Image (cartoon, rainbow, N blue to C red; front, side, top):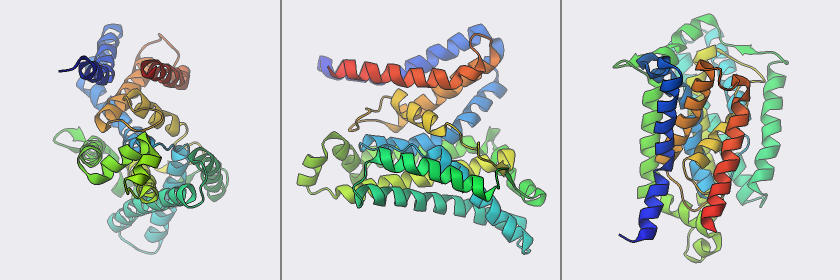
Length: 323
């Protein structure tokens, strides 16, 4: 095996090695970290941004970016709660109202993702500009809908919706099963389908991909729809946790999702990346937050600062390796 290929594989194992090392350090700092309950808590907390990061991986591998996913999640949460409350007020059974809300979350996310993709591909506007603009728009609309406060799910609906977050299958919380299913399906799509290969080709060299008869605009549009759908899935899992949506819902989720993708080894400029690495990146960020909660080593209020520093450090290492 060529030395270059061996080196590339070893670099690919870097995030997993880092996760194991961090877990060992966390256990040394606080023995409560290694308990089953805490492990399930870490995994459950990682599902929201982890699922979004899976969708973000397609976008970044394809050479794009989305800064609006946290605001999008807040808007979807507010719309879903309003939809379910309205259905409940008109006599629809709680179970059906919840099912309609869950379907609505994925549909709204897909439509918002489609809007991003259309503006980027048809409007020829840079992804950074489009999603920076919608970042403010989505959260402002949610704030308007909530009249500056919070939109709360009715009690009967909250009871019917609770098992989506608090329920378990074979002792494992439902969100973890959903995260695992999403990651496995996305990994297969990215690595084993023509669409996945086209995403990577566009991220590597968009002009060459066009010469190779790849429908670049359609692939990009699809990637943003996938990301929007993933935001919807994450949101429908998150809503029963608090039963409300407010202007602070999903705050900094975009930072965590992008950080998870970058930490997982995906190139910032696109062209290469993996869903497995993204999942490891999401888990690593969740472990960092958990360690900050369990120890006084660093203030929990510096969690976002740690994530930002990690993004910068990984970007620097990627640039150095490229050179």
